[in-house]
Image (tube, rainbow, N blue to C red; front, side, top):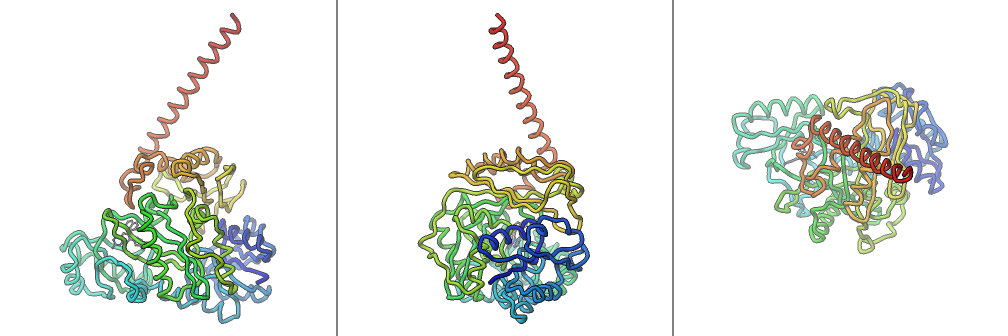
Length: 480
Ligand code: MV4
């Protein structure tokens, strides 16, 4: 494998190219006209413009990207996350053109992309699943029968959905008809498939996911968990590894369950198995994400592994060179997604020019970044600027370093989620580890953010005053 095309943009394109370069593999970037001056274009050995700014005229043009790959003698395509990364048809077309898709086989993507097919695939492996009916329905009468059997509250999910899209909680029987109709029409509009299924609603879960890695010789490893409960509207904001609630026993059981999920679809490469956990330490399989995830750096910190390097190696047919027994968690890592969004204005995208953009540096601080000072943040794509990742021997060390690193960022020109990240890191519920997927809804408001900011300003001015008075005392002593 001499040359890799990265079918993505921003921080993840650069992240992948860094490892390719480290391994002596040449890199090709693709870009839209909105990204012609972007870092990922500058970073690559070669770069090709593939179209206009809207994703469906550039980064989603699978055939065009394959054409570029063929014309430049590319051996493999890395899709990053988002865009074409979980598009089974794209993976298949790449395979058919004799190019290596750095990811699972198209069939694994297809199975896991359909939530009911995924449940069906894992059935013979004794994986715990949320009580419910694994059957596609569209009619209200059947929904009523099922809900009566499961008991309210229930959750309606789109079979073709995922990542929380098209989900509806129903608290009581009277609301079922309306919610069913909504869910079906929403699923039809979003996925062209109105099929939904019904599960018991787990009301205050944690979202814990297991990273797995598989080679083509039947070896599958679990690289432990990431806790991703701090999210708003299914957008993760803070992630960490390991989780502060898993016991070593539960970690092994969930790890082995995740490996079995991977085996059930003949998985290859990096993947993530999502689970919900409840207060009684029950865990339930939700879905499998068949890509490298945004939050993979926290796993890299605690395992010392380079996940992209492993992806590339297994994609070119190498055996995994470590065994499960060799893997150990060391320390604790946190990730904050730094978005160009305004936490004081309902997280509205805050695009504009990065008039000032300075990143924190230091030991145990990693910033996976896609932007530079002076650049415009385009309106066309996900507004994530960078990922701030910190590491410590303990969770508390990682949290303190996160707060320090947030303070060391200098961003002028757009609003960011940095103050929100600080709010989370200073919140008692986060610090104690006692939180669930409702953290943001339960504790966050613009007022709460402004309050902590004001208190901090007050403390800062008191510290300054104290120093001033002490300095004066010294001066007085000297002058006396
Ligand atoms: C659930 C659930 C509770 N009960 N399923 C969210 C993303 C997708 N992977 C599945 N998700 C969930 N599925 C059952 N049966 C809770 C979530 C969930 C969630 C739901 C509402 C609001 C925020 C959430 C955050 C994480 C997970």
